[in-house]
Length: 134
Image (cartoon, rainbow, N blue to C red):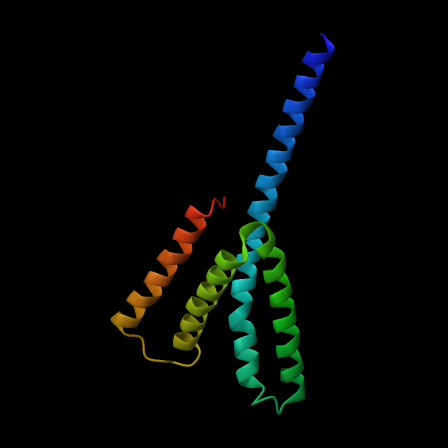
């Protein structure tokens, strides 16, 4: 095998490994984005339980959860892009907070509200599909 052939093999292997790593990094970023979206209702709940931040324990927990949530979101934003990541994060948070409101706080659930939540879910899946996420 000549020098050029060895270089071609090395280059192809490097490109394969780079694409494989990028795929894994993009996949991990989407997983982190979902985790960040699922954390949003957690800090919404603790914020409500903090009684306008008059209960120091719950207030501190709320601030900690927000900080962790935003850090995870910022890590996911790198490969995904800030516009898509923020829209998906907010959508997941909205859907989960809606479900939490219905289950925990017994808020009224109408077919119109459910259709709006379904449209948010369709938008989240659509953003994932068209942004090249895996």
